[in-house]
Every structure is written in C-alpha cells, then in structure tokens.
Length: 64
Image (cartoon, rainbow, N blue to C red):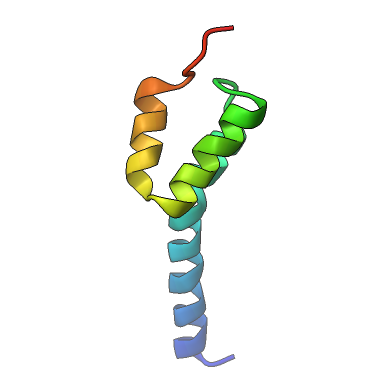
C-alpha cells in the first residue's frame, strides 16, 4: 500500500472517530436510558456537537 494512501486512511479514520465520539459517549453513558438516550443521539446527529454539550450539562432531563 502506498504511504500517501495509508496516511489518508489514517486521517479519515481519526476524523471518523472524532465525529463518532459524542455519539459513542452518549450510547455508553449511564446518565440516560431508553427514549431519552435515543433523543440525545438523534439531536447530536441532526443538530451538531452543541447537542452533546447540552447533554453533558443537562442530562438526564427527567429524574428517576
């Protein structure tokens, strides 16, 4: 494999990991469950990382 292709693959893998980091963080978090967790993940997907910041500050919305 050519070094430039390998370097490009590594850069793309790092970008993909950084993009998935908030989703994985919410997915494996114990702060929320069920529908609320799904709503936060969808917010991160469709709104942006700002939703992840709100998740870190506000979740869980409902107390158990």
